[in-house]
Image 1: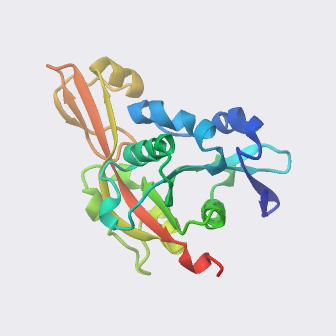
Image 2: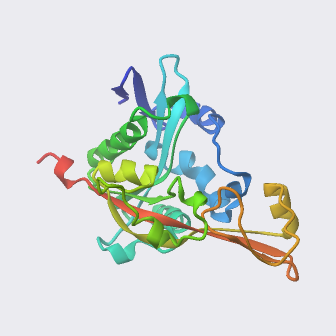
Image 3: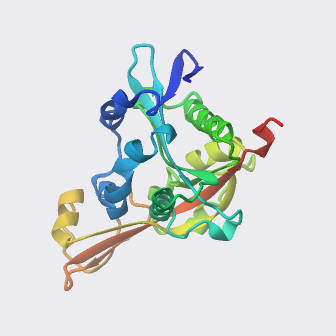
Length: 257
């Protein structure tokens, strides 16, 4: 059943399967190179087909898709160590493998959360996460995770993610805006997923994706990349390994007896 908030409403693709194209069509501001993770090619586009109940859309009064949260259920053994170092890639891989094998999911992981630019600010990002948390509880689970991509990390490409994630403001909340949304909601920063996404390509691929020359081997700072990108001209190979931050939302206090 659709949920409502602030004059808008949330639905899932299980409830409104005709909105798949509209969901993909709402656009995003990801840099082009982020669209070429091989695991994204294999799994991300199949989320509406395999897990429509975990693809949540925010609709405005004209029934337009103005926000989305993509998520995947997966089996988790209850320990921090079981959260994979390969973050975004691995949690989708695990979720799809469990579905194929008939292994019950015990937790849900966020994969992407996005609003149209006009709705940024005003607390709507948290509202979208809160709505997804409610769906997790309604499904009988109590653990919501996310391999979070901190929004400001690209401005500090040489800072280790483990250091960046620990930086706080005077009020003790994370300095990073997206991590701060999660922590304000009750999320716990667990650990870094050091190889959450791995995006390889030829030198020419990366030239096309970024408009940069890549005319020397070594580490190159690429706009909007969280880390440097490694270039090997002799091998005609460029690879970007992105770290994310595992965040855990323990939803037990939300679950009614």
